Image 1 (cartoon, rainbow, N blue to C red):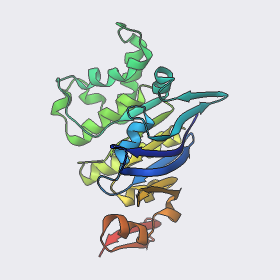
Image 2 (image 1 turned 180 degrees about the vertical axis):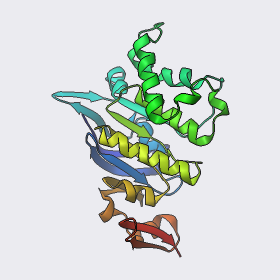
Image 3 (image 1 turned 30 degrees about the horizontal axis):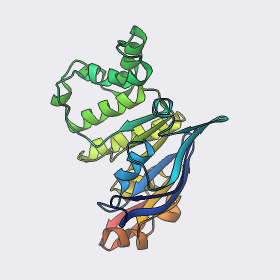
Image 4 (image 1 turned 90 degrees about the vertical axis):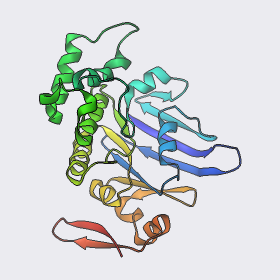
Length: 258
């Protein structure tokens, strides 16, 4: 399955455009990292990709073999194929971790149907893989930020999507938990799951490699991480002097603000 966005533009009021002429394709096992300043429209683009918002121009669709599905016209099947991890928020009710994660099976259940034993087996398997099985009976709202993020990602995984879209998955996490989430994203791609994510950390996009999109001047510059993430474009979007320095110890560039 691959997702394609063609010539997208988005405006809230019909006059000011957040971005124009946005086009890209994401294939199985690819990671597509989106960078940009606050308010540039990263989260808005994600909401367009999952069908919550409608772009002013262009089209978004996924291709699965000979079939082509649109986010709005084929909403039910489209959403079964794409998992969504929103920015971190507390839940309104104090679900256990296991009950919170099992909600990810909802797209596969009929109206008023309860999760089956096989659904719970899958839930336990994913929790174990994510390292949170031991806290399955804890209240979601009592978890640390890193544990909550792991649970949110686990809920997206048990949906068994072919693509996962993540809005700032490392937001508000400490350094160690940021690293763990980035490693989780890498493992998802290794399993053939495509991942689209937004981030404020150029170092994360550089580490993950693959494809990168940088919002600049109401456009999305798309390409390989090594080609798109440059000192010039980072300084332009963040308004600080930034150096990209190759570090032999890790074998890649790292960002250093002057």
